[in-house]
Amino acid sequence: MPSRPKAEGGVRAPAPDAIKAILHDLLEASPYIKATAVVRVSGLTVQAIMPPSIPEERVSAMAAVLLLLGEQITAAMQTGQLEKVYIHGSDGHIILTSIGDRAVLTVMAAEKAPLGMLFVEMRAAARRLKRLV
Image (cartoon, rainbow, N blue to C red; front, side, top):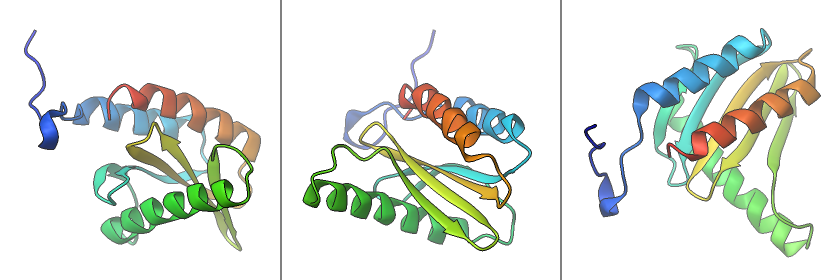
C-alpha cells in the first residue's frame, strides 16, 4: 500500500478524501448542521464544507485564534483542559473543538439544534479525525 506524501516537517499529509468523508458524515448526522471545517492551529483550512457566502479562509483563521484564546483562558482561570469553545448568536451556534493539538473541528448549526446531540457527534468526529490530521 503506498504511503501518503509527507507534508512540512516530515509529517504525513492528511488524507483529504477521508477527512471530507468524516465532515459529510457529520453534516448528515444532523439537519441542523450548516457548515463544518477542519482547520490547522496555524489557521489554514484542511477541509471545509461551507456555503459560498461564508468566507472560508477568514473563518478558519478566526477559529484557530478562538481555540488558542480558549486554551489560554482555561489555563489562566485553572479550569482544566479546554474541551470546546461555544458561541451562541441570535441565528445559530458555532462550536469549536480541538482535534489533538494540531487542528480544530468547527461546526456551524442552526438556532434550534439540539446541543447535546451536536456535542456527541462532534466528539465522535474529532476522534476519527485525530488519526488523519
